[in-house]
Image 1 (cartoon, rainbow, N blue to C red):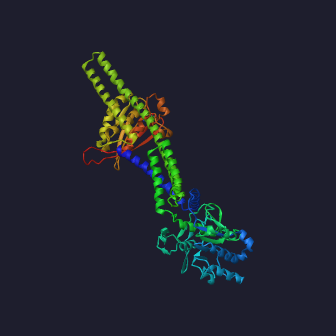
Image 2: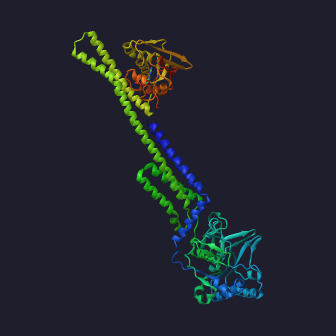
Image 3: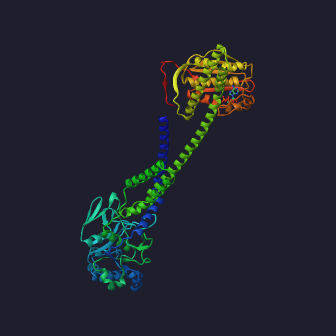
Length: 619
Ligand code: ADP
């Protein structure tokens, strides 16, 4: 019984785990798709907006070559003259460093512009000039400008390929043979007056350690954008009036007129932003020294497994609204987790934990729902089966009870001759034994149907049960003038439960008697073949057609013919007989023809006697 229950529980638990594993696998497989990355990007942007940096004094200014500057100074052709003017004016404000985000690879058509620019560059302290990757290598400024720079910094971008948002810049770029640091990083280290010390997992600039974990290609710096408008942006035309803003800060000088630049980027706030401003935000990120990093893949996996476990345990131990309430909390926590960890500077994905929490909870809930419903159905059918069984037992008990009652009444009312008294008390004795057998059979059959029967396994001679049953059925048969012939007593023995087997065979005999007209013959014969014993009861009774034959082992089925015969019955006996025989590893064969009789054959394996010890098995 215990092992039966344990195995049911094990199967239920294994099913639960399998459903969870399936849901987890599904969510995890979707996590590698573009949709998941988009969701994660979106979550990152939303958390950036929802957790703005406050109280930070920007250390940089963007000196903007804007629309007005171009309008006033003669358009894009005048860019070098504009740069010279801006640099001269900026120098007067004494900035810490100046990073220019306008590439200067070619000589200007206006020779004097280059000469002027050269002079302005020479006068600029801590100058960072840009370079970028072109086919064949680095595109540097003209040599006459390049020599004047304290550093060259690349202006390569790292927009997200899915949504084009600039969330990070590569701190290092290498084209065969030559590695360059990012413009913002060079400006940062010049501002700090430090060198860059590199190790596999980070870059050190003075006291600042920039984590570049897990060997990510290009050592991306995740930009922690300041709220829009926080970094001062000064038009070239207004530098003189804004000298105090520039003083002591690092200047990022570049084109912000979006119509004049190819550098139209999108920031996490969903707005267009000039490349030079992106560099300023990257610089501020470095200055603040709080760096965003992604979690390790294993960490995400572990967290998701944790969510799966909680979803599984919730529905394993709770049901109804407490389970659903906890699930809502779990999903809410999964949705909130990226925002929570963002405060710790971790860019945690949203899709993976959320998808895992939702899918595994839904899977676990559905599984439990169907499991519980199945349990309910089973317990309902068990209840009705139990009621039917009680009905059967009550019916079966009526006959011996009537006999006992009648005999005892006769004995008390009348003074009978000794021989008659003896006969009646023997009858009372045998009928009460029958009664107890019925009760025992009822209990056994109950447990048999429940699948938790501890069936006896003892050897007994086939001839013994045949003899006992024939002795019991003969008085019944005689009342109907039916003769029962035992043609050949069976040889060999069975292994199993003698009581149950007796019940089964007796049932076949009583049916033969019940469903045969008076004066007919019933034959009992046996045959041993290939380790099997075939024990048959053949009557000359009302018989059955093929349709009826298909149903006779169903509980409570009775043929119309049987009902019309006037014989009382419950239609349960054969279903029990079949259960008993199959539990003994055997089968029942039936052949019948309406009006011509039926033949029921029990086919059972014979037992080769080894030792006489009785044993029990747990079924
Ligand atoms: P019961 O005899 O109490 O009705 P059983 O389960 O023993 O229940 O039998 C089921 C039905 O099978 C019977 O009602 C009867 O219709 C049919 N049946 C069983 N044995 C015979 C038989 N020997 N001859 C004809 N019909 C039979």
